[in-house]
Image (cartoon, rainbow, N blue to C red):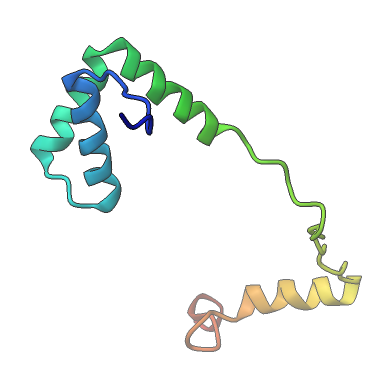
Length: 105
C-alpha cells in the first residue's frame, strides 16, 4: 500500500467553491457561477471564514520600500514681478483669441 498524500475530507460546497474560484481567477466564470459562488460563501461559515481571512491578508497595507524614498518637489516661489505679470496675463488674455473680449469692448 502506498503512503503518499494524506486524504482530505471535503464537502460538496468546498469542492465547488474551489472550482468556481479557479474559474473566476481565470476570467471564465459566468454570471450564474459567480452567483453560485456568492451563495456558497454566504451559506457556509467555514468557507466564509477562509474568504474573510484572505481579504484581511490582501487589505493589510504593505510596508513601504525604503530603497526608493519619494521626494516631493515644491514649486519655486515666484517673486513679486512674476506674480504681477501672471495676474495681468490672466486678466487681459483668454486661452484662445489673445485678448479678452470683455476688455476690448
